[in-house]
Length: 122
Image (cartoon, rainbow, N blue to C red; front, side, top):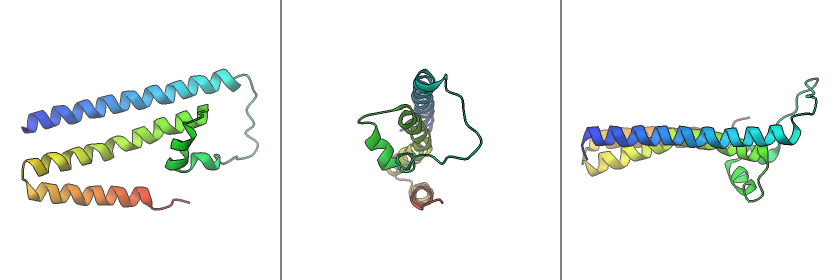
């Protein structure tokens, strides 16, 4: 695989991923507005997101019987997954090209990404 082919494949992956994510978030937003767009918003006190929206596994499980917040959160998870997928694709490409230096550096980047996504935040 040439560098130009790899760049084109990564560009297509990024474009398709962002468009898919935007479509999912937009669909969830429209659904949310249709469901409760006429209700008056109460900003007098902070309400944290539901526990089902705080974990990727719970968001994925919520897609069995989706509601608008689940769909929006899933779209955001797709958006987060795009750079991770790009790094994985680069790792595969560098491995096929037998380029150990770039493969190891990409593996380190992937490990840092995985660690930062795995540690609990708040």
